[in-house]
Image (cartoon, rainbow, N blue to C red; front, side, top):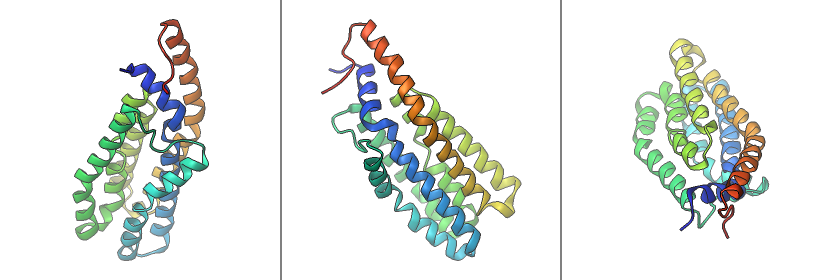
Length: 197
């Protein structure tokens, strides 16, 4: 049985902390901001939903381009991340659909919250708080914009989420490398295996 530390090290090495998914999130939210700026809400909501369906395949492509393994098969923590992310999105999708059908002005807020609700689990699985902070900042910022600046719900809100994704995507490589250096040294000091497979 592999230790939690060994699983985290393997995940950091192979998945590169899911950087492709964060890059895909950045691209999607830039698209959402442009759509919100140029289309009326009735058309924008359709494109926001269609665009949301492209995030996963885009994440796989970007992961490959960035040299990361988007699935990290064989790692139990990767399975936990995937199960949590898919389960929470599935459970919260009715809220997104209700917003789409009945309250399209709330759709950007619903998507900003629902699509990132599993990030606290990422923090635990990867062993770093950057994912938790991304989630907290994203939800708080999007919520404040939605309530305080209603005229910017379709442009500033998705732009804010895009910036949160961009910042995380830019910070991840250096932070992951520092984490790997620190934890690989810790693992060696403890005399345990620092890699899997």
